[in-house]
Length: 225
Length: 225
Image 1 (cartoon, chains in turn orange, cyan):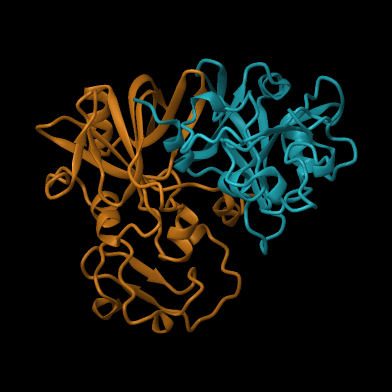
Image 2: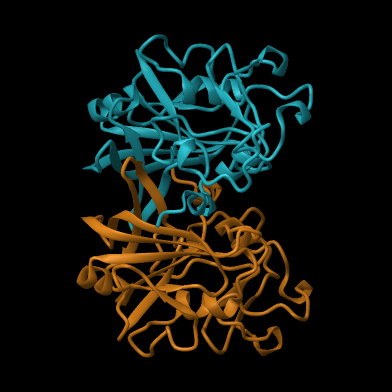
């Protein structure tokens, strides 16, 4: 028996993982960044094989990780988490530091960053796990807290996109109480669905300044489906 | 340049990872448990090659993960995190549920658990990374929060043991301000060192009911070194 609700008890952060070079970089939101050994310090990250970032990491043999601050905006999460870099250059308009390997490192809305050189690539099915040796780490702003996946889910009401390792099809979640009056609302900009059956708060009860956690569209733009 | 302080911004939980069978089980504390793919749901955990738990996972081809509650006691963390199962059976005296693969699953002080069947073992240097397919997941107590590594470090004043992937030699940490009056105190029971140079609070300012985060010994037992 798999109760998918149990998986939400695992703690994760939220990161922008980037790769590429000065001419063309790309990045995506990841919640799977973790240290795998301390001596030497090595870090792993999982990236969907269909993501442009996976291709860039394979080509450059390096990646950067920017650790998002707790109040990271929906705009930056929407840009890196819900849009593909195949259509536009995500680096435009951001403060980018180029690492020792040449990979772009996003400084915006981040509290610290890592840069890693890939030493191992593991095929784990739908995703590649890239294991990299740490070559650079620095704090950007030590006064702020990290954004955790739990905070993103509970406070920001965000959900994992389909390409994430932690994506869970909502039909797999147990509805604690069945309420036939519960509704769904869709963001017209990005398609994000606010489903009252899996959220603790009714859509109407959300504050007026609530915005789409995926792309930042306003609450009033949402359409009942 | 590697600023090791930057690594503390990465978010982790704290888990008891177990393996073995009904006759003999063992487990250790891990902060590296994470989902690597969603379809099928697969999870990875890193275990030091010298740990008895690594040997048990290799022999049984399965492992369980108990997600510790925020107020997990120093006793359970000390037992699984700082003591070796080579010397005694850690399962004695605990509430153990045996999984579909026969591995023990610790229910004490945990809010949910997973059981995984190993599908891949990756040698990442000092550690093995075991990747397992999820075969069982259940909530034990849905009302409590998970213990995060950050909470363990900041509130419980705990540190990673030497075998952990996230262990950092304290000499590598930048002292934000050098204070020659800072002291060190050692736990006589387990050897845990409270180092004022890396903690935000002076030892004398800790509450009287503060206990060793590693083994639960009382504050008054600590010896200045």
